[in-house]
Image (cartoon, rainbow, N blue to C red; front, side, top):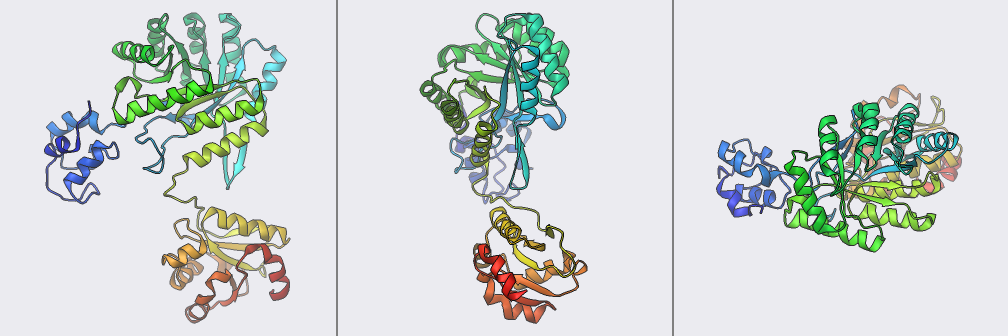
Length: 444
């Protein structure tokens, strides 16, 4: 059982030095007890404290890594039940299913379709993470053949779904260096699969029928010395999956029940596309570390990726873009210059409306910690002095011959000060970017 805050406090130096970021050692102890702080943050902790509090300072959900290099997918390391308490750390890894029963042509086409499941959103590229090869044929040779084909045609990390140790060994000999997820340990084969996972240094998916059996199986596997695990309660009906996912997370976070302190895996393979997507949304929202989806339809995968992005965005940290000069179209030296903030939604609204006006222009998003125009102004994050400094350091003066700056209508109050401290003529633009086109026709 985890130590409480007072027990942790007794082992701390009690200097209240604030080096950990907390006001007092007691406050830091309470954060550790809640799983929201690590002992590493205390530079003055004794050897005894380090040894005793090591387990207490670990996240309730262990960190599990799949893949290598830039294809590494991190799972777990979670410390909260609800993202508004802190945030969710590692987004659900989405894997697309490939059955080894497919003929060669269909199989190749499916892999190529999976490679295309990447989308641009808010200036970033998002997509799926894994190709999950399932041994539906029961033929070890065919399974290995399909795994080799996946490795040849896709740079995505494989997930190997089979309960056959022979099939999995052949597949690992082919792609083991890519550190795939091996899924299929159960009460009958767990010893053989655990030995394989340890030999190749890969994470192991564990499945049992029900939470009680799953907890017992996890304890047996960890005693064998393997702790890179992904859990499956065996449920497939969405109602039961939801219940199991919630219980696993609650017991791991609130009770520090170690057998459930690992990420989970869920499967969305309903034959109905709409229901499959709804199931996927539920599993992503309720803690799935890995989600295997049986679809390559972009119209299904894109909404799921968007939902994942929303769930795993830090609610306390707005999405921001880099503060620099951006070009819309091919602006010349007489192109208009628009000022805004680096809140992504604000920037992309302004950019889209400038594009709709069929005007080439420059956009200057000032760094306001990702807040909108009026929010930044009210919070003192967007001041005339900050705008002056950005104009001087962004390099925009070297790109245009004029000195005319269009500011958002909501910042009209800054006009006099900006005219005083800069050599730019300040034009007060519209309050809403949707009328930029008519504003330019009348004022530029």
